[in-house]
Image 1: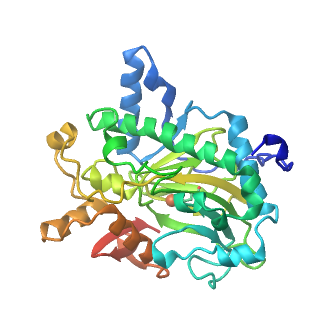
Image 2 (image 1 turned 180 degrees about the vertical axis):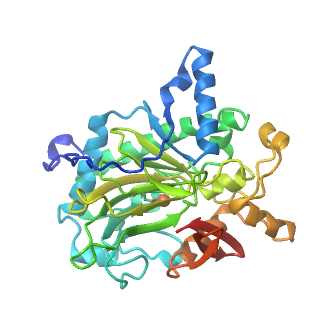
Length: 383
Ligand SMILES: O=C(O)CCC(=O)C(=O)O
Ligand SMILES: [Fe+2]
């Protein structure tokens, strides 16, 4: 579509940062361009930083990944237009509503819980794109059509260039060939996000009387390989600091990507890459009245890939499997003779489970955890 045919839309203006002195997480910043450095010392430093970031909290900032700030802000302007511009019609909201029990998040999520859309107000409105829907205009809001070329270009770059390079870095940590994770693990055939998905989200302020509701998304792991979150000025994202045993805030870093590692990578690496524990809470009081716009790409493993450790990795061979956390639970079942599922089966079960309402809470060493069990596998995340 010719650029001239596009309607004018308001730019996205980053809201002011909080003035509050919050308990910020100290996350490592990785300059991805260093991977192409001619100086081997730069590369060694980058690898070292990556190993540390993965061992510690599994969250990291990525900079110099190849998307200029103007392009990023333009994508936020499109997300803002979709979710704030009255672009999705009432008919589309109904027809395109997510059907989470199917194991897919595709489509429109109203501000009423996940799934059937008849839960109580949660203030989270989003639109999630999967590849088949991306190709079918009937599965997309009409009002977004003039911008689909930009949306696809942006997310194709994020998936096929940025994520591929990140996986190269992670492959090197596993002492595997550069494209090992991309070639053998990452789903990338098909349009844009392959078997993963990307999402435009708006967290709106809670309604009157509910302002005190501090939790917007309870503590969880993402279930795929890597998640690419674009850093946003409204503070709400928190990461679990496993050493200090507390939640800490993720600070806005303009233009940076916040990367988290999902459960697939934890299991595939035999527990070496720990899935990031994170949650979304109410912003600090000076930002609570503002909507929080966010864009994210959730990358997934190939559906036909078995969910079991990558025995090719010299690092895993040398250091052995770490039977803790999600991988530990998974290993117990494998040791008891469970068939190894493939990723498609695993994530459908995982997502369908996630809509069965609030999970059970258990206290371990004075810390409250949510306990989710699906296919017999227990997943614990601090609440
Ligand atoms: O909005 C964010 O910053 C993170 C959201 C998130 O963790 C998720 O959707 O899985
Ligand atoms: Fe998440």
